[in-house]
Image (cartoon, rainbow, N blue to C red; front, side, top):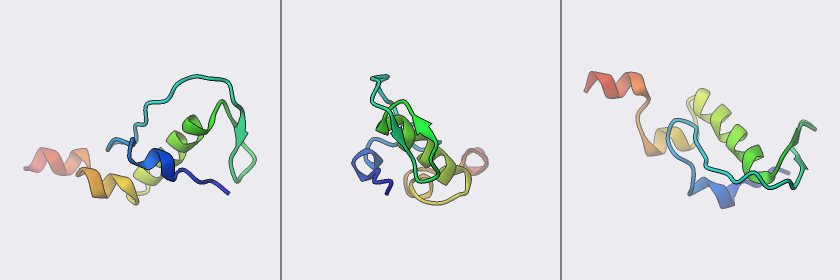
Length: 69
């Protein structure tokens, strides 16, 4: 199970999560291997942001909405 809760507070709007590059391989639920858990979660959060769900809406408006204001 992907548990990225420890990284959600570090997630920035726009799909960014700053991660170190330590080599601690981990696989996500689909079986894809990632260099470490943080990078796996960063990819997960980016996909959530692209779908318009999760953390992105809570933290910041999409760029298209910010331009209108």
